Structure formats: C-alpha cells, structure tokens
Length: 95
Image (cartoon, rainbow, N blue to C red; front, top):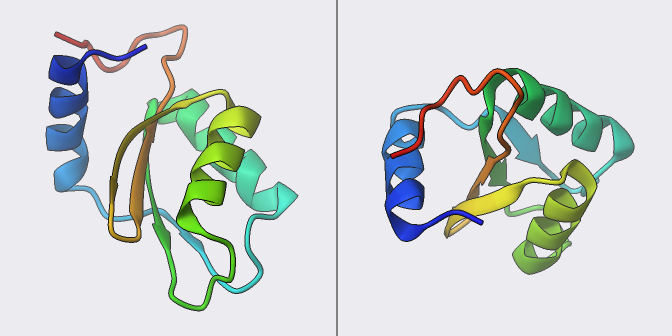
C-alpha cells in the first residue's frame, strides 16, 4: 500500500511521461494486459489513457488492470490512469 507522499512522488515522475498504452473501443484485451504487466516489470510505472470510444467504464478498467497485473493505482485524472508495481530491482526509490 502506497502512502500519500509516495503517490505524490510517483505522480510527479509520471507527469512528464506520455501515455504509453491506449484503451480504445476493443476494451481490455489479454495482449494489452500482458503488455502493461511486462512494462511494469521493466519500469515500475506506467501511464495509460482511455479513449472516448471505449465502452468500458474507467472504474472497471482500474479494477481489471490492478487485479490482473497485481499493481496499484497511483492516480486517475479524467481518462488517464497511472499504475505502479514494485519490481525486484527497485528502479524507483520511494520516499
């Protein structure tokens, strides 16, 4: 579980990064979830955007990604989601 200070730090890191994954009208697929999981394994922090054409609600996407990828939601602003999962190498040092 992340503290508010840790979430604030992760938000500041993700602010300058572009959204690397987009969820469109197809919704969440197994390929997309495995891509997010692989990216989290390598980099610990990922930014995902949900397009307006997506029929799935943002809350359902949050729950599905967190449960499937075993990560934590850092922030949800509008249609942009930021997820974090600590890796064994600890690339991001949390305060």
